Length: 429
Image 1 (spheres, rainbow, N blue to C red):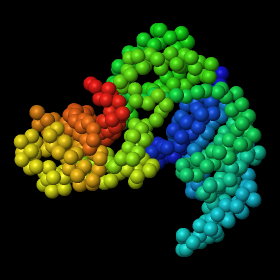
Image 2: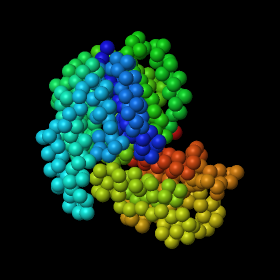
Image 3: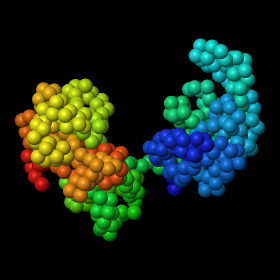
């Protein structure tokens, strides 16, 4: 069995949902990359008894490594190190050299807080220099050091702010205590397939068939996740099970070749960016409120191909900014395929682009009708020298869900249209 680990995320603000936990998933990914089996992630408030209970629970589960995040600040509610020291049966001692290093950091920060009594701050931060006897100190990235406490299990104590935790993780990996704790790790490979246009139930049926037909299927650890309207299938396996994974990939291609758009984990955003090389794209949006343009411009290098975009809710804006004929809107309605195509055509013209994507719809709440309920969205992707793809979909969820799913649909239609320039068979229904 591989080395096993558990994560304890501390912080009442995380427990109550005021702050979203970013550390647990990040550390989990790093452990999996190392081949360490993750047993549990727990979240608890800043209470000594609750932190200690999580440590005991994970120790009873037989983990080799416990990683804690948070609770290393100078205030009274930051008490993770003290609880860990007691759990490990080690005395908490003042490291005077560490105290001086922290004080030097505080002096550099003093210019930001001119009215603060530095001696009082130093006294408060002295608790950050209290460490378990025999622990390895991880130098502060902010003012809070981390520690690695060897034992059975070994405990790695990291700060809460991700900007401090993530650089400190690299230092922790180089410590003898942590390397010893994860010495039994197993090498794993991890592959991701991305699909679009397939419900999870459809994938579940295919996986059941694969389980019945593939010898060694149980050697694959498969997890699926529906994110932004796309299915992510992550498979983890030991290197000598590569052939088994290959058989799984064959089964998925046999049943869902049209829905698979990535077998190497690449995002549709990255694929679109590659296809847009040498082109110039413009957007025209109503219900998505500029989110398609925002998604395109979030891609590195987008300044090379994004010409601009228009967000036009009012009919007068559609007409004045994109040249949509008001008579067309009157005849078909603002949420219609003819208007979506006219918006795309207007974006091509206004920004002197060769590629355009337009969305117009009813994100809700309210505003829908029996003919066009909330969630009705019309899309049009238009290429100056190629195909125009226009679709109308009824998307589920609230306003935020409809907008998010709409941006994903727009990206996939854009990908399909651009691929169709090279291979017209891609456009066949």
